[in-house]
Image 1: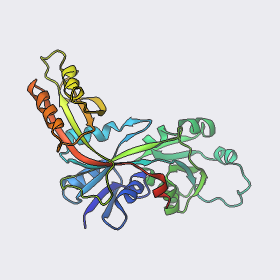
Image 2 (image 1 turned 90 degrees about the vertical axis):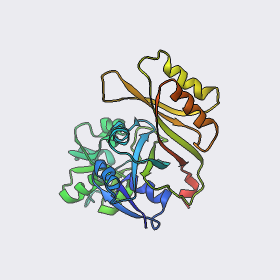
Image 3 (image 1 turned 30 degrees about the vertical axis):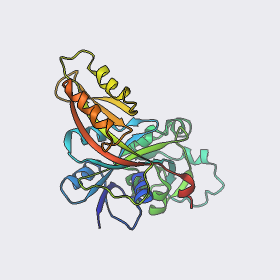
Length: 295
């Protein structure tokens, strides 16, 4: 049975992996920190890692992108999109059934959560918890665990409902993220080709392009190579090369497969003008379907 590393337990990463990959098809190994997730697959302890790579409202998770690019050499084997519903969790309270949510929030003094999760709940935090101390931890599941372990009624966590169930916490407020349609994109990375049981919605290829320093208009030339072939780019983002100030590579998601005729030809054209091209993966991508998830 293949082993999969992920941030957990009690995290959105874990929820998404169970939904798209199934609970019984793989052996899941939980880690408290994302660097440990990456390194478990690099070192061969696990076959794959599940990494959150982009959120609807926060954009790319730059630390994870940079680790994928600069520190590990693991191809992307699949990706999926999963909805994120953030909840305010606390220890069960005695005799507080008639208390309003607003009054309960006034008694909270500290909230734990992942930094990205805290950033997605700023409106709620400003309105109901402006007085609290916010502390970022390695994962939302870790935040829920701390609330259970510290056993102090004035401490709460922002986390998935599953984390509350896992640690015996009650839900003080549901769905407190700032915006609806809050989705996170996860990638599966590893050396072995992924053979998914579900039909993919489409195939995507992710590449890194470094432009030649002595070629004015090189980026325009790169984009033209895709444009005249009618190849869609779903994402293009510049990131520093970390070699010299002011030098960047371009992280590009291409809505095409390397098995097609057009995409390899486009990459050859780009390389012909002196660009360096690195393929991070050609992989199936899966969308979340709510009605199937609720069955």
